[in-house]
Length: 347
Image 1 (cartoon, rainbow, N blue to C red):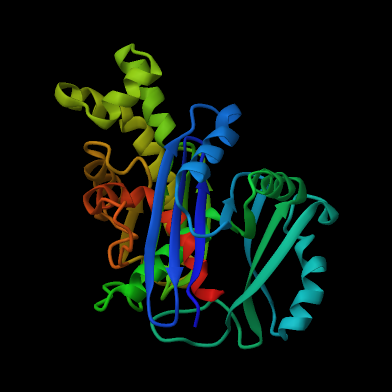
Image 2 (image 1 turned 120 degrees about the vertical axis):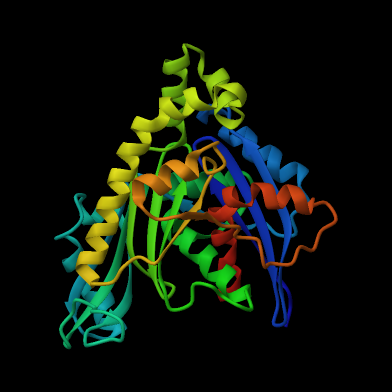
């Protein structure tokens, strides 16, 4: 079986992250990792061009993701039917849940589970019902995304959604771990980026709830800037390395943390009430997770200990250009890119 290569390309508001994964019948490995800051959105194309002209990627096939208010994700209940029947029925059903004209969106759906009793909790479904994942993305968002990639000579294989990429990264990590610590458990993945926080709640690797919260790292930076009376660049530097100002930084961001944790708790409560299952473990990733004191603040607010996880931890690296220590340090920021590249397993 030939080795397949795929690049997971996470185009964020502040950073572009690219992870190339190789896969064949016997093994899977990381063969390229690249991260570059985006000064502003006007420079995005130049940043992407630089990444792909200076990195020795072995393929031009990429998987990227979309997010934001033009992306609608719903978990809906429908009568049990075949895949073909579902595909025919979904347009009619989608109109009930999507605040856009159906002709203006790209639709996709996937059956998640059927009703009936299950061990450890309730599906919330009767025996003749099934839960379906419905995703709708505005066509113009997809078209602009594809046009950007093709202009760079890239081949966009799949356009995913950030929260699902996060789940795929965790699923790959669990698969590669010989002693998976989260098997058959309900876990919450929380990825804190620059402009938004993604939540994906998995029940035995199946996504049961996703949400985007529009509070994240930039809000921490803004709060520090205002509290200390400094510009955003200085605030960003102090956020990463507060030194003697650690207590002032913690005080500056405490209100933002409270608001973010309140939204996270609402999401957890909704899931636990609907499925009658507790969230057993909480995993954090994203560019903001290494901020000094953040874990302690979240643990106090959420009454759960958040674990910062490494999506590359059990994946072999096949490149002398990748520094293992640097990869380990930056790995929590790569969760979405790894999850996008993990699609190579399903080629």
